[in-house]
Image (cartoon, rainbow, N blue to C red; front, side, top):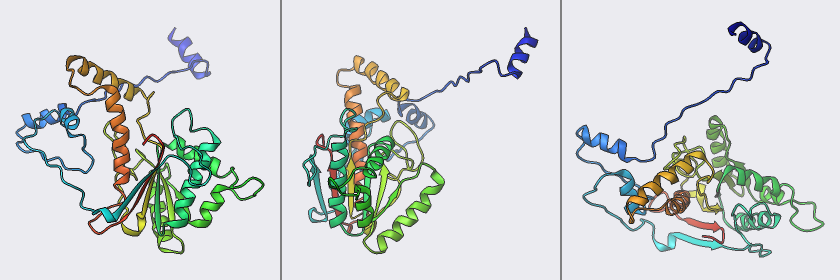
Length: 299
């Protein structure tokens, strides 16, 4: 039998399947309790996006003796925030849900909204998309859809005429080069736009530990981010096996405690937490200023 097996394997008549066994931890409490058992007496957790604190502390699994929530360092006149539910040009509805995002009217509405920003906001603009698939789909439509019927100019051509447009690369080693090109573009001529992804390559999210993420980890201050634009809502990938298992785990906890967070509440919170992290790119110090625009009627 072994000889026949080896012969078939050598001739390529057998297909080998690789099975991977993975272990995922769905609660930070395990690591935090381990620290406590090893003698750690003081734990200080600080961030601008820990809210809602009640759910965060439960996930950590520690009883925090005190919590401190302060107002933002920026004053009201340093930030302008707006939600666009429709295109300012044609009135196309901006709804990035899975069932609506493939329609060309959605792509037109997003393109027109971005163009309106690019034509009025100086220096640098950061545009964060809910996912890589959404970003690449919309960019491909921008390069095909015409600004006006009968016109040869596409939305993409109009964008690149207004500003230098750079796209977050999938290859980590190229990120620093693109970042450098963006900075140079901001300081030359009419400025630059950086298309990136919430929960992209550049940091870690609550559940899926990635590398550094543009929307969370790279510093864009002053001229680099006079505007931050969020396209869609970056909910975790619903059908990802890790997300499915995380939701099952949360439901098990909720069955034991009526006050516990439900899986639906966790899912929505994760989406808006990612939005908050991306928005945080616009104000990086006490004297910074800029605008925040959310392009989705669901916000």
